[in-house]
Image 1 (cartoon, rainbow, N blue to C red):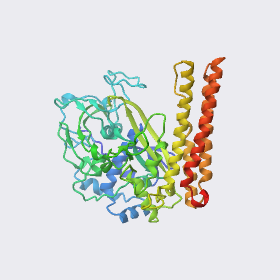
Image 2 (cartoon, rainbow, N blue to C red):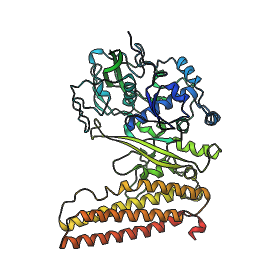
Image 3 (cartoon, rainbow, N blue to C red):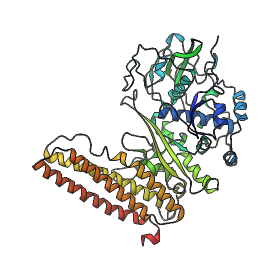
Image 4 (cartoon, rainbow, N blue to C red):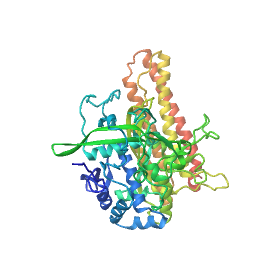
Length: 534
């Protein structure tokens, strides 16, 4: 009997409902219950991001919205019209069956069966061959079996996040580049329900467009890898970075997937114009040592890194002067659209959404996953809208972006002051420094920074002074840096001369922090309201 798994009707997308229940749903149920679902939750942050991107592509083809008015109608409706899911699925010419013999979903049936091996190659957490992982306890000889739902989720994730390196060749080509989403942090504006989240991230798209179509509407790819430019947003969202073929089998009356082929796929050659084609990322121009954008340098995507959180990119993510945007910084498209929806009265000014960011860190060869990331930053609507500076013609700056930028700079400088204290102490003692002193400093700041953004949003929305909000952040940074320095000093085995040297450099740290506070106070004055500044 031929195996079948219909992604429209069969449950496979993991979700959390608004009442806290966990569950799995097919695409039809996902849209039918989107108003009762809190969010999609994959086994890893990259999977969560990849599933959101696939669902967004499906939404665009089933619902659009082709015009701003269409978006408004979808936003006002309590639920999605689920009949459109079935209508699109039957009229698109695509197969949503994971095991369709002629057109399996997001797969290449032309890959030779003789090349098949363990399905574990789809799961970067598992140890396969030379892929040594930190937490996995399986070995290459262990048999790994996935349910059809699990296989579908890892299939979608592989196209977006599979590392580069050597893959199983269809014939000769083994080398592959990392899948596209490894190059940037995927940014998602999250609402109170999945329906809100999907619409907040839905760009305008004509569902009748015959060119910009997702991978499942395109011709079945050949087994050999290729290179091309993108044809539009739904094409980018479902980019076929790998050629994959799943091999189902029946075990105790249940369909499982134990074997698969993972081969090089379509190489994305739009890297030079990434800010024009990838809409779920933020970009910025590299800076010179003097802190100015490098002339002529292309904008680079914002990425997530260990220790230092996503909140440090809040200016690039949330706040960009409209007159500077597209030149040195660029927000995700959803943030631009959010400001427009608010100005048109569809979203209240006092609303605070969540900006959720997903990332994956590879090793230096871009072939092994070293870390996953999922971080959240408040996205206050009033701050996003507050993008008008003193004036386009007088060179004015966005005051809200200026204040947030000063807050981030203060935190960065305090972290640098901690490292200077440690370096100078060990230099004078002729000792080798251990773990960087600022490692425990950064994790202390995301929650206070979220509170700072919400308080700044409230002050901006009410037309009140921002000075007290800025002063509270200044105090938080100073107290956190001093507490981290004190904890570090307690851990240093100091006596006699070393104790005196330690005290000397702690005193120097306090002096630097006071100087930073003075500079911070001088910097923020030009961004405060006129009456308050006076």
